[in-house]
Image (cartoon, rainbow, N blue to C red; front, side):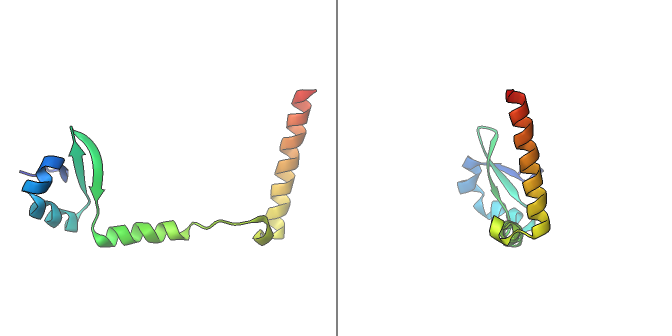
Length: 89
């Protein structure tokens, strides 16, 4: 029988795969091994939402940084260098 928390053991995978899949379609299911969480099975909509959130993260370079943000960055770097140098004196 499934635990109410949406958690199944690895041994349940072969015996209860239909139940696990049915539940995973409704909510994420945790697969445990020796009572420790090892896997999470999300439904496709949840998975795609997570992937879209990851895609929103972008990597920037100094070349595409706005002048205002670059000035703040440069000022912070200079302040850090001044503090570091003062600590070494």
